[in-house]
Length: 118
Image 1 (cartoon, rainbow, N blue to C red):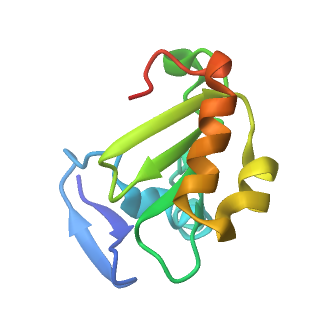
Image 2 (image 1 turned 135 degrees about the vertical axis):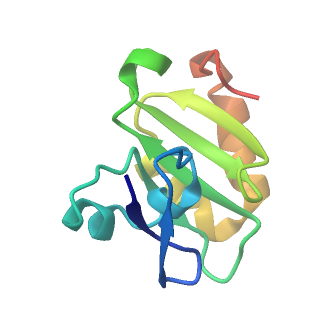
């Protein structure tokens, strides 16, 4: 079976049925992937002009994480600082202030850390 996904350069590529569904390729393009009939697990808030970090809201993997989660992700999926719940509104207010502001928010809410967090 062959599946079509969107690559990082926004062109199409074909992948085998062994496609790793945790890849950012799918997370970054949920509307396009959904229009192709696949469900993206996360919604991503990118930092304008930066590839240093991003925010990832997961509302699909409740069985694995125990609830919806919001992750502050460093680099290209290198480190995940995951909080239980929906923290998109708070991160949206801080994201233009940079990594330090977002990481401080994570630290201030450490009591909500998910067991899968780095």
